[in-house]
Image 1 (cartoon, rainbow, N blue to C red):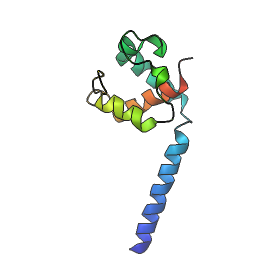
Image 2 (cartoon, one colour):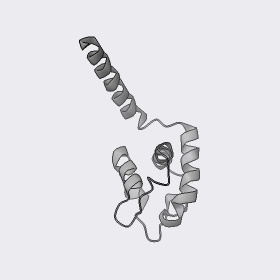
Image 3 (cartoon, rainbow, N blue to C red):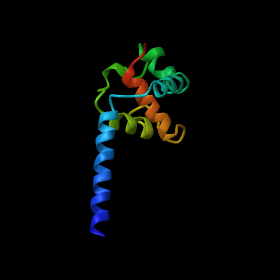
Image 4 (cartoon, rainbow, N blue to C red):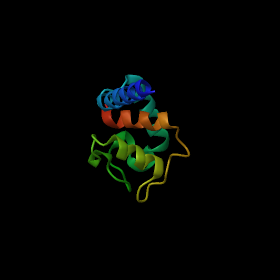
Length: 105
């Protein structure tokens, strides 16, 4: 039983480490998917290509090292932004994060 606990702990630590490394390395297909999701759901408020929002926060001011804050804000909403957790699937929100990290090319 003790061995299963340590195995589980080791696997959990490995997954956390992989997530931390993966925060800066995103797959091109995730960026593309994020760009499409952004165009459909986010550009109206946050501006085309994440620039010049008319009435929403400028995404250039959001720290690119706080994945959890970004995901929480998109999922649950923040200030005047409505929650998107009931509209977007978790993998779509992660794709938005990838697009946000990569920036508009």
